[in-house]
Picture (tube, rainbow, N blue to C red):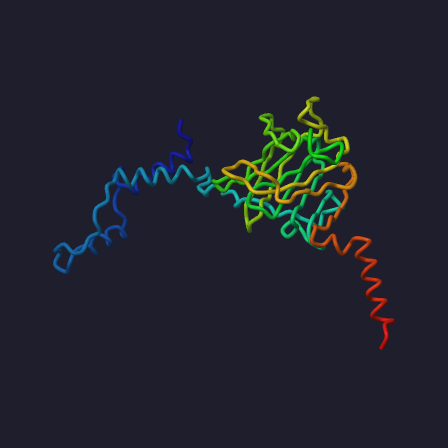
Amino acid sequence: MIFPRRLVQLSVLLIQSGWLGVAPSPTDEGALRAGHGEHGEPGHQEPHKDSYSTFASEFLESRYLSDDGYPFPTAPPVDPFAKIKVSDCGVTKGCIRYGKPGCDAETCDYFLSYRRIGTDVEYEMSADTDGWVAVGFSSDKKMGGDDVMGCVHDDNGRVRIHHFYNVGQWAKEIKRNPARDEEGIFENNRVTCRFKRPLYVPREETLVDLHLSWYYLFAWGPAIQGSITRHDIDSPPVSDHMISIYKYEDIFMPSTAYQTFNSPLCLLLIVALTFYLLMGTP
């Protein structure tokens, strides 16, 4: 059944394409006369268009119109990856930064954030690498027997979220992947990703309950054909205390290059040198 409004649109298209014979309007007659010279001889004419193809194209165009004859609205462009907001750290989400003092998600050697969303935990990770970035959930600060979530940059330019389990010093990929709502990007030589994972999971060796507190292991490194290889540094950083997803902290951990200046011995030497320079013999 064709609704009246559609019937009117169809009739107009039939008239315009010459399928329905109607008397030409004065404007049409003027247009016909314009195609002849002063004595009626044929002048320049536009090439004749096939009436069926014209009708078909106009009919197909009408399918993209609403009942009121207006085009359907188009969805706004979607940002492929929303940037990580560090201004929310310690307020609406917890963050761990490793690198230069004052660094953020785009400049830290390693960055991690977490926040609760309903029955899920959303994680954001970023690291200065072209391979992979990961976080492990450990009960003892040591690598081995740990549930690990990693974001891996493959040879096709995609960043995928994988689930691993540390067997000693080796990360074994696990087929059961609890991640969902995955996002990832490789840009400016950084691997960045975002995903959700359920708070509670059925008890299993390779999966931990995130409502409990864990030491967080941080690692990143190169990848070969989408497979992770050894991490970039010999002793990857570990949180100095257990992290709870119910407490939004903003933790900074200086990288090796900046740890020297924070050690007690180094500070003592600086104080001694300063005292010597001030009290030395003129």
